[in-house]
Image (cartoon, rainbow, N blue to C red; front, side):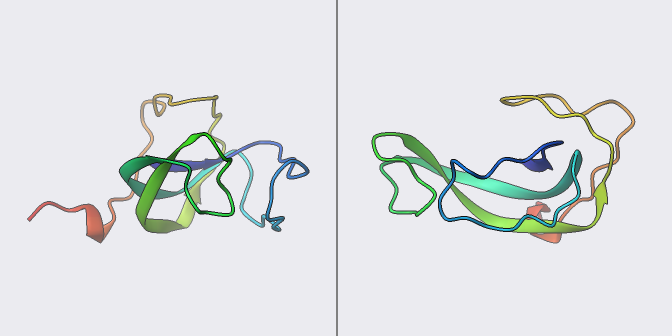
Amino acid sequence: MLIHSAAALDLRDFVPRVDCPAPRSAIIGSVEIVDCIRDSSSPWAFAGFWHWVLCDPVLFERPILDIRGALSFWEIPEGISIPVCRNCLVE
């Protein structure tokens, strides 16, 4: 799954609080979804909800800039080249 940074960011409702130096409106990396569990112990998790378990995060050396995102899953615009991470290659 690719990670997209939003055009605007409001962290007031999130705990723990963090600074976010990532570029806005950009695909900044990728991560693998390996499971989905209820009531994760993560400080980012909300009680009573389902949560993805993620692994192998990759921060792209060069973000893919000026990419308009959307809520939920969405298709990458045509013509956008996504770097392939070495962990994701099938041997």
